[in-house]
Amino acid sequence: MKMKNIGSQFEDAITLADIFEVVKTVVLLSIGKSRGGLMLGMANLGNHPQGFFGGFFTIGSNVIVMNKIPLQRLKDTKPDLFKPYAFYILLHEYIHSLGYMDEKVVRNMVYKICRDMLGEDHLSTKISADTGNFIKHFTYPDCILNPDQTCIELVNGFDRSSVSYIA
Image (tube, rainbow, N blue to C red):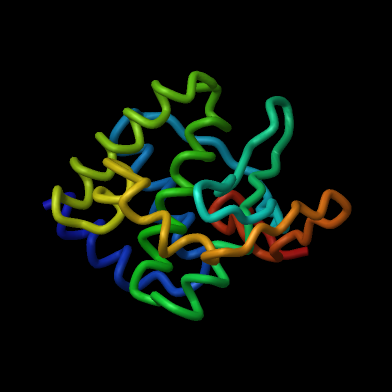
């Protein structure tokens, strides 16, 4: 029952804020933890055909930063991977925001949550199981882009469910 409801919530998600609401739901159902008041920043974190940073969360902050280069690449070339990839990155960084810092632990948690809540065949589960199989879709081939360390663009209305009033 949970998986079907989560699956339809995932399918109905359009924006990164919508996807993040699904992330928060699956984490609450899976490990019983949540936090509000997070912001999303978009930045050029670089591109390299053999690897890249999908995002990061800085301890003590309330900002998840996502690399906008893979998101743009997916929009341009593989739009069917956009939501599964965004879900995977947001889930990974959200778990960091809950106090889990060990990368191996977080990767295992992300895989288990994706598998249990979305199913073994879901693209987010497949990405979390082996990101390397998908890297060709996330990066621009034969192109190395250096990160832009000067600009993080905040996404308005990102963590909607933690806001109980309209300002």
